[in-house]
Image (cartoon, rainbow, N blue to C red):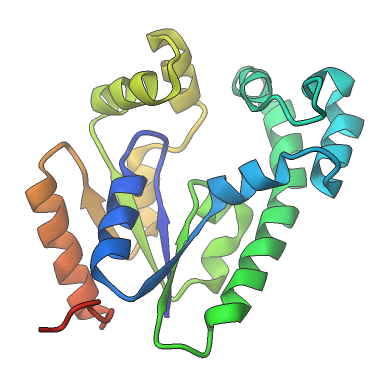
Length: 202
């Protein structure tokens, strides 16, 4: 089974995926980690980004300035669409390659992707879990995690989908408002329903 885990920034997807990884036979495929790997010097992805955004988008080592790129796309919807169009094809290709490696095992594949629907990755998922949270709490988490100010965190969230978007599209919704006991209890119910195998069945 392939399960997608999605939600906007600061909702708590990492918390959900970490719990699944620690307790169940799952293979986590993290779209953000793939994106970071693609951002290294000399990759086809970086070369294409330079063509579209200019040489100033890379540092002296030739690696993508991800923070600068984020500033551009969160202030310009057209640039954001251009970046997503370029990024999606590379990420999808890598995700499909990783799926191929484990598809014949009993391991459940978890695709952790904030832009699961926008990229079309939802079409290869059997089930989709949406992670949502209180907006103010999300902003607090983004500020702490990315070391940016409140205004920038708010801009970032404004550029993303609302909780309603995920509620309407996902098979299951996990609310992550800092009550981890509730989060984990709900995840256990979902995993039982989807027959995800526990790591330790004793």
